Length: 297
Length: 133
Image (tube, rainbow over all chains, first blue to last red; front, side, top):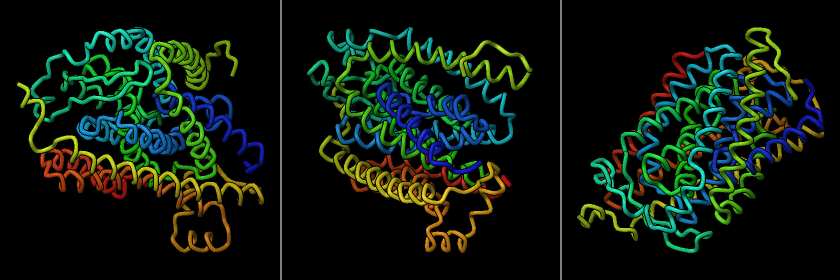
């Protein structure tokens, strides 16, 4: 393959769009970048996964730093859950190195479908919970209390200081482990799982969950990147435009994110996920079994 | 009950240390790696060349002398490689900075939690070097 101007610039443009949506929806660009590389640029799944995971570190640095600066991120919660995401990522990356491309594509499609559903099923909850002050009323469990995981942040859309109590630490640990596994295996940040998990089971407001997840994603992706790097799967010529593009897109997306209402984000997110799930499934079936579903890609 | 929720060892003012350290680390890593990628991209676009999509080709670039030679002679691969390594190291450095910041704040519980994360990273590097060819 020749490193042509059009290949690099198109990849950079696609990555910018993916990074923008990723940051806007708080899901990490990976979930859009991997399908873009596989479906639009016809790159092998493993190269796509490895390039994506490096770009995911870039978005985590870009988005993560901004949320830390705005004090939206809950650092303690991040440090605690990271222990589980990194362990999961280690296992996931080992699996990614040894599994067939089409198996990874298939699992990717399943994950997208689940995420479309998960996001849809929790829509509209946050704005109500903030207005009624419900986030401050939960009862912390033993671990959350011991580790002092509670916090507060300033919500620009609701224009108020939102206090919240964290509970469900054990559920959070499980979700973080699965998210880490998904991250290492699929080249995504695993942000969607973490964000919905923290929001649903741990009583963490959506925006705090997004900021906290964003920060955790960096070190989680670094763990799998180490393995991919040693294995030679991180193709520099692919990584560079993808990483630069996602950083640009993510920086713009992050600026807008705290100004939008959560419910709008969830709607856009669900629809996009469902579509990508279908396309990735079509790809996996075609490669694994020679079954061809009607597809736009 | 109130006391349970606000541990004496870590009031919000001290937590600023951790926030500031983490923020600085992330911004520095992001800027430097992106500048390297940017330089590499410009170099690559000036001289388009063939590149195989294989792991063995990628691994062949890892030799320090190849990277050094590449940096001196404007080979995009070398800039991309260093940028990638820096990108991977940024969150790891962030973990180390956090351990230090929690230590300065006398937040020993979190020194342990964050230290455990660092151990996972070390185990990954060892496993990678031992097992994956």
